[in-house]
Amino acid sequence: MLRLGGLKLDFPVVQAALAGYSDRPMRLIARRHDAPYALRAVILDELLLRPGRHQRELMRDDPEDHPLGGQLIGSSPDRLAAAAVRLAARGCDVIDINFGCAVRKVLRRRRGGYLLADPPAAAEIIRAVRAAVPPATPVTLKLRRGLDDSPASERKFFRILDAALAAGVAAVTVHARTVAQRYAGPADWGFVARVKRYAGPATILGSGDLFTADDIVGMLAETGVDGVTVARGAIGNPWIFREARALLAGRPLPAPPTVAEQGRVLREHFRLTLADHPPQRAARIMRKFGIRYSERHPHHAAVRAAFIDCRSPRDWQAVLERWYDPQRRWPPGRRPGRPTDLIAAGATT
Image (cartoon, rainbow, N blue to C red):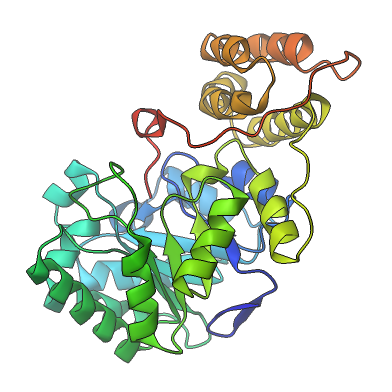
């Protein structure tokens, strides 16, 4: 069980917000593989407050896409609060504030991870958002473990954590790298464990280096956190949620998905994307997902190259027909380790 305020989830492993990835199709595929909760890709408050694409996307309320978290980023307490009200009104079950983004253009505008350097400003944003949304709507917070490894940065982290808990935040997710690290080097799970001990009964979720079901079990065991958010490890790998459920229930790790099962999920993912976008755009969006899915194919290098060359729905169908033919006898699927090029692919949380 995982609690986010009044929201009760039956499983402590959730789909994180991923810029450029965690759209409705990815979230639905994750839910169909036993993710109990998912977050939208982060939205800049200014985009939400003016007419445009995000307004149109938010008009769609898919009954299957709940419970749903809406993650916001910005620097103005008033504007973030107003955007949070809109997200809640449009059906988001949880409002999540992002103080963890390490993208340079975000930092230059004093958003995301920049707020870790300014505890008073961060606290003002948290209080404004919590006060603005309905009391029954949980507000959660995403943090990195600081701007850098300095003692001063760590002290600021805990000042923000204290302010968040005092303001009534329902849960805090701690990504175990600093802003300076971005995604380089190992995540410091020891720091996450310290945060959980410090926070006591408050709900703390861990994030960082969760690429397999074994990683998930390891973080829960080593840190004592109440739950984890799976980010890059879920791209092209919705099976991670089902596998983690098995391990946490004391069952054996399921076999990797067969090529036929991979093809079925890929076709469904593509169908959902076509329902949301024109065909050519859908093909471009799905290209980055196909590259990730290919890591599970027994002929992964060739399949990856085929997805890289995809430019149209026809290209997509050709790849699926050649490499995911359910009638062909394929070798077993793979269970790869950590991807090596997700930073280049643009995945951020």
